[in-house]
Length: 286
Image (cartoon, rainbow, N blue to C red; front, side, top):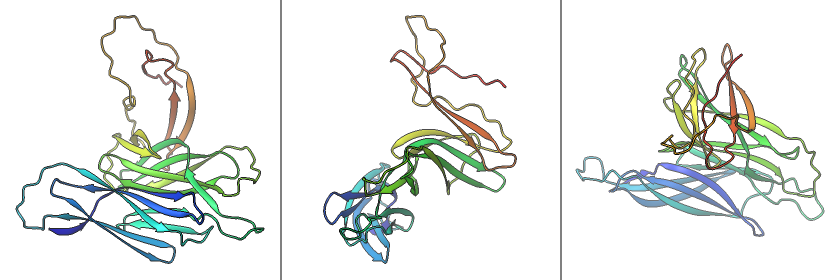
């Protein structure tokens, strides 16, 4: 058996409510076949960067061993300890590919200003894929919210998973909850390069902060047909009459692509008031 790097599906930093805070990293790694088995992990640290190597054991090259085509997973929870300075930013790099950042809690002494920050998943407003087919460059654009003036944009990470593009977008706020915050909701646009082949007008499964989206790749100067409704049941035979009615609208967000000329996309979240309601269609006129 040969030791090989494991494919990484997700990385998440968790903080225990203790004093001093304990930091853990939860890693979901892949087992590409029935012959693959989890070997273990190694942790090293250089300054504010924690490097983690997760490996599997697989048949060595040249070994003719039949393996079932079953993709499995292994969950690992690693204790990083508490040796982190409050208010400083640290990076966790897994297998040299996936990077997560966090801001250490605490810091300062009693009576001093506590400038440490707490990270939390940001509310997501819209997700888009912009493709420059001539340059061969694609990027994922995520518009996230900041609930009040105490929140600022935090880290963002992207992972090309086996079943979806997985993204974590964070926001940070002061750890001191006694600070007064102006009630003003803002949005932030985050662009992440996609290191994979993206086809024009194709729809891709994207999981952002745990929510799954079907996102169509938008190309400048190309008009794509509308994507299929997300998560809606296929229409079947009904024993009752139906009527087309306006859907209740929950939110509307305009997204512009970084192209010349710019392309404009409108993302609409509409409601289904009951279990009998189904998404029908939309019409556009100008």
